[in-house]
Image (tube, rainbow, N blue to C red; front, side, top):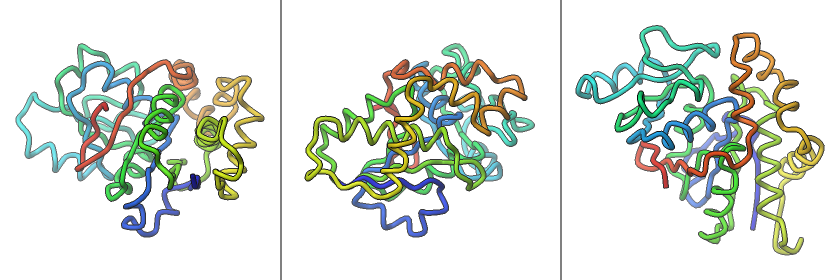
Length: 243
């Protein structure tokens, strides 16, 4: 098993190169958490797009009332959109049976870069064991953990989650059967440093502090709750569905 970690989407310079890889996209704050929440609450499909303009254009092709425009810029809901990026907005009452067109600042861009991957999974702390189980069941040998980061910069919360994925994937395996890149080793060490209190780590992170300043502190509690949402979002053919 080969495990590599990219700390920002900028490292994906050739999307075709992912075609034989199992890619786990991580955006703890907050795309991974919100997407899992939306699917748990009955969203039909989620269509990630890389820009606000693409979201609006796609919406123009759908029947009114069948979709919701979702996403954020600068942490807050986009003007004219139905929902922002807080998991608390994605209630069953609002999203059940709906197509969600989703344009977040970081997560949706990272997701769209994985369209050629063998498997593309959206992963956070909330569904981490579901992702690990999938990888093990598929006997995947070439794994890339793609951190969304923030505006193409390193985010500690995504790296720690990537380290936890690495820890769980390698647990019980012999060192000879696992090959970790330097970035995977670094993420693993970060996870071991922070694993006792993930919520504290989120609150002390740059992006966590930013979200708290906007009034989204409760989102951090949801995002840090390990295995609280047993849903695995899978991106394939341009849409995200629950496995």
